[in-house]
Image 1 (spheres, rainbow, N blue to C red):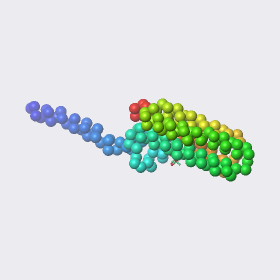
Image 2: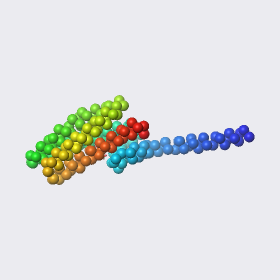
Image 3: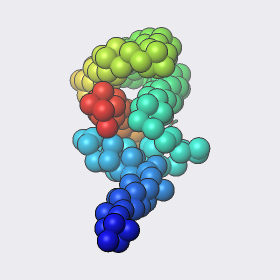
Image 4: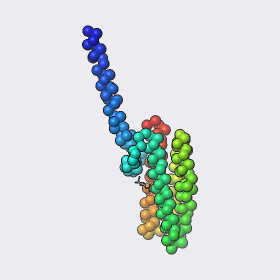
Length: 183
Ligand SMILES: *[C@@H]1O[C@H](CO)[C@@H](O)[C@H](O)[C@H]1NC(C)=O
């Protein structure tokens, strides 16, 4: 009697154990899905985090990886802006580009590296603030480009890059917020 009842009661424990064990095999993928689905641009989030190798396996490394994707894109865009300045012949467009470079430079050189360092010390609020500010600088750059009325191929390309950076900032802030909410 005693033996059979103990066998019965141990069964649910075993299946519960298996249920708890199974998802952990896939936890890396699930974590990226879970975190990306909470962002405003899920596809962009997936495109940023999936290709990384080794794959970040905890929320903190995902947030750090997302911040470095933002930094990479902003650094790249600053380089693009500088090359456009060198080849510009339109004074109004050149002024707008020079202003963009001024807006991007401190963010790329100081603010985002500082935010990444802050994140390593667990200061996520500061990182969210810096990324929000980076997004504003991108907006200001774009307003200047739009107002200069430049509609050549390179201005269109810069507009697309500004938009990508802006959306990446949104994704990065959302990933950090998920981390703060204990995801
Ligand atoms: C910019 O972001 C895209 C989308 O996440 C990514 O695929 C690309 O590698 C990034 N570029 C740089 C230079 O970091």
